[in-house]
Length: 82
Ligand SMILES: [Zn+2]
Image (cartoon, rainbow, N blue to C red; front, top):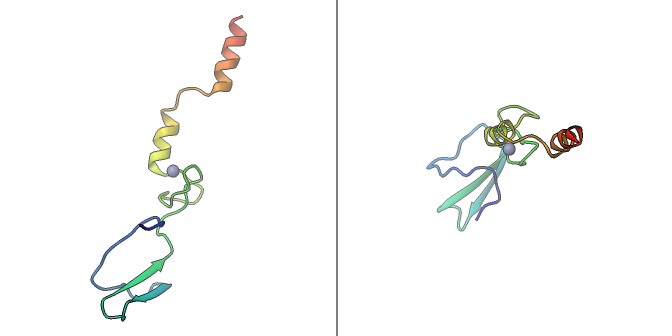
């Protein structure tokens, strides 16, 4: 439904934050506000869930940490065994 990093449904829109406010329908039923993400873009999965700039998100950090050795390392081991 939304191609955004996060959706929050609230009764009152926050004030003092830069963003686009869009009134839906006659403007009395509901409003939409689009703001910049609170977190940073993960360079691996491109989702805005990283805690720091150029840092991996928690999910990608776990994947990288527990990833088996790279193909290049495996090929070097094979060639040294021969
Ligand atoms: Zn990630």
